Image 1 (spheres, rainbow, N blue to C red):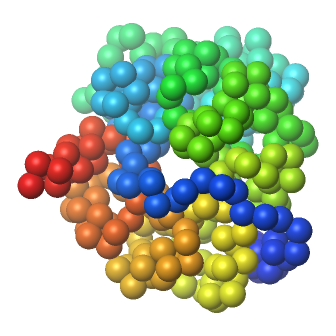
Image 2: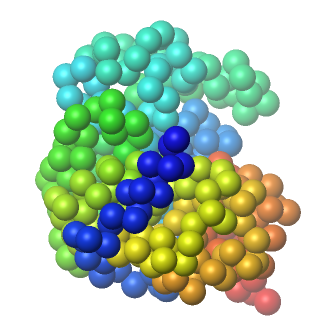
Length: 289
């Protein structure tokens, strides 16, 4: 049913949207730090973001968004706090103050003892505003609206925050300082209706890419600059097909050197990875040759 709804929405996109102006061809082998350097530090914490941005020089900080009971956008992948904090329950049932009282780092030490650090204990869940304030307008942000149907007004809040930090200025968008992604076509359409200049990326569930017709891909290009497929779905042939429809290709989540090299050989434009240092090294090797 989810795939059917996606295809139905895609078929309608061309009726009322126009394509963003970002030149997708300029995005070459982008290193997208998936939840930060989440292979080494607790995901969506400043420890993870700092490592990916300051130490590994990843091209993008990826931020998944959830929204609190009092309408604050926070960086967290799951709708519940159970997996990545010492709390339980839904993010939407917590106020920001209540969420800030949780420990968002100790779980990582317990799950990955070989990567454990004492400074991870007691890490806090950051807000989107705090993330942008910390890394500034020269950093690049790859932001996902997670479960937007659960959070009415998420898109408006996101754009208000980006605007407050000056990230929706034309020159910032052209330079790729913000990309907004979602599995929800409806959420992407909403963002586009609010500001047609923002470059968007459509995340795809596993198995969807090869079901899309050429017409659906062309119609989708009226809305988005790129596609985020499950990396296992990609081949040299369908990567070429996506490119021929003017779409950049950023597969998720690529964590082994072998897969990184294979996908680069297909011509992908970058990958989401928990190990941005590894993908960056592979790309630097190519430049040296």
